[in-house]
Amino acid sequence: MPTVLITGASRGIGREFGHQYAEAGWRVIATCRDPQAAGLEDALAMDVASQLDVEDVASQLAGEPIDLLINNAGISAASGQAFGSFDYDDWERVLRVNTIAPIRIAEAFADNVAGSERKLMVFLSSILGSIAEGSGGSYTPYGTSKAALNAAMKGISGDLGARGITCISVHPGWVQTDMGGAGAAIDVRTSVSGLRQVIDGLGPGDNGHFFDYTGRVLPW
Ligand SMILES: NC(=O)c1ccc[n+]([C@@H]2O[C@H](COP(=O)([O-])OP(=O)(O)OC[C@H]3O[C@@H](n4cnc5c(N)ncnc54)[C@H](OP(=O)(O)O)[C@@H]3O)[C@@H](O)[C@H]2O)c1
Image (tube, rainbow, N blue to C red; front, top):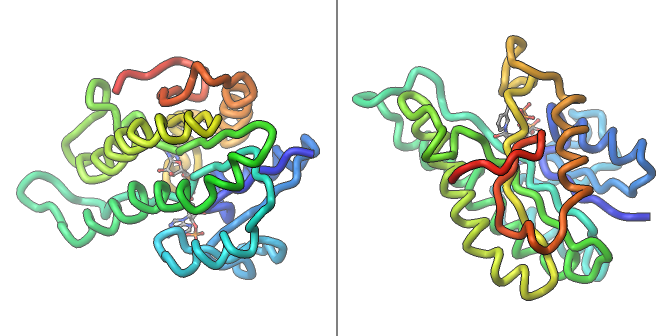
């Protein structure tokens, strides 16, 4: 039975990943900030921005193979920002959660993934992190956090590839979640089943690439 570890499994896309992989017979290790509040008593408590939490969960799982690590947890930037009124404290908070935390987690669990059969890592990025296709403007703080995540993912893909691990960034679509809003283009089921198909088809040749939930390769 393959194992998946998901960050930010309390809501939205992360929660749906948990449902779909459990339904497909996988062992699901759900992690979230507050398992009890999320009604996920079996989940492990992990704030992705906390080095202590990450070390604690990594030591609990030491030696256990993780076939697929899904770095899903993420936050939006504070609303109402634009050039002339950027909130730099908020921007740093977004970079810590969306950019630095997923890389810290990739380092913390690399041995688990390298010791598994499938050896996959997926980073939830966004089309707003594409310099070619992103929107800029008020999305600049969030967009930079995902552009930097893509650059970091690409940056570590050589080290991971040398250990047999394939890592990719993905854009899940514009999805109806707390972050995407009720008016978003697709529901979580559509996004996550598309992403699962992309993940299912991954091979070493895909290492370091950026896909959307339909399998389209996205420009940086
Ligand atoms: N929805 C979209 O349209 C869309 C588009 C492009 C990319 N994305 C990306 O997809 C991912 C999931 O987004 P979503 O739409 O499902 O968002 P969401 O509904 O707002 O859920 C975000 C999840 O991340 C968790 N999280 C936030 N900060 C955390 C932290 N410090 N430690 C642990 N967990 C934390 C939240 O946990 P709590 O319940 O504890 O807050 C929640 O489970 C994010 O990386 C997002 O940037 C989403």
